[in-house]
Length: 184
Ligand SMILES: [Fe+2]
Ligand SMILES: [Fe+2]
Image 1 (tube, rainbow, N blue to C red):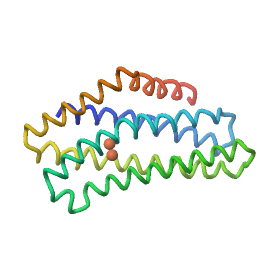
Image 2: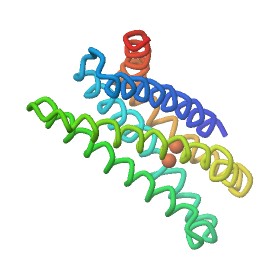
Image 3: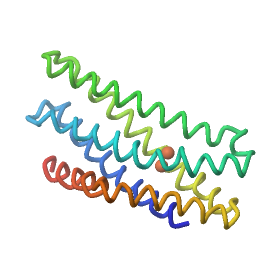
Image 4: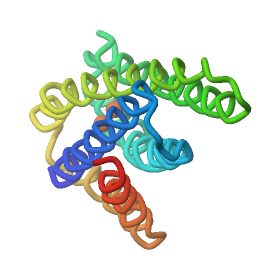
């Protein structure tokens, strides 16, 4: 499925940003001179690319349709598990944002929460992506009827196109390149 191929590519981009995030955390841990405002860019990436663009396609189209078409996957918790992990990732990100704000107000101990929530997020997402690539996406490919797959592809293509018109992909892939360069 074309839409799934694109989602797998998006996973690679999310992984790249997770690696960048880990490198920033290492510098926080060793108290190196970094621009803490770069973490707000990472949060922007997570909220508007990983979550607002990628997770939205999974939740509103792919997993929704998969649950309707293959009720077994809705009933055995396979899909709910993914949705719960999306929610947990949102919690880590809002805790990270709070820790950053506290640090900027002078709370040095908040650096601990910056690291803890960032690493929790990256660990969760890496495992989550693995499960989707090796299980959920395979279920969709193998279990959905062809006409339904085409419908999912069409709906996702429309969302991708609208995002491209707004420059979403270009902006956030640019963030990966920029921050990767800064953190080397
Ligand atoms: Fe997901
Ligand atoms: Fe995903």
